[in-house]
Amino acid sequence: METYWATADARDWEAFAATLADDVVYELPQTRERIRGKDRYLRFNQEYPGDWHVRIERIVADAEGRQAAARTEFTVGPEELHAIHFFTFDDRGLITGVTDFWPEAYEPPAGREHLVERY
Image 1 (spheres, rainbow, N blue to C red):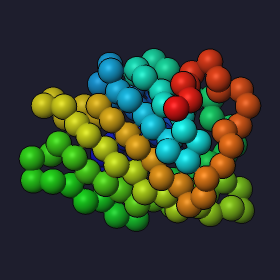
Image 2 (cartoon, rainbow, N blue to C red; image 1 turned 45 degrees about the horizontal axis):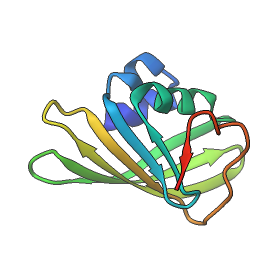
Image 3 (spheres, rainbow, N blue to C red; image 1 turned 45 degrees about the vertical axis):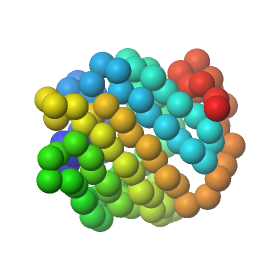
Image 4 (cartoon, rainbow, N blue to C red; image 1 turned 135 degrees about the vertical axis):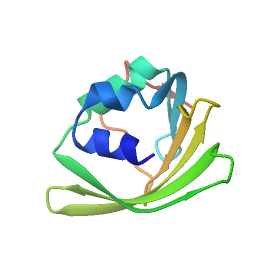
């Protein structure tokens, strides 16, 4: 999971994509958004606005390497946000699911409707 965060922060999208299963599902409960598939999830991250950076505060994983949780701190300019993320992995160690929990519910920003479904 460290590679996932490091490559996202570095905007190394090829290496980031290599951490994901083709059928990865990304969910944001606060905005009721879901993204299905590696290509859409990769594009979502590539298009995300702002000069954000992430620092891992803590990672906890099960003994089998199939589930993990992370607490992170994101900075976007002067703003600091903490989030909790839950991951599932396949038997190859690729990420099959990501659920992000941010501090507050919010309406999703315009411009990503082409990548997400609302639930």
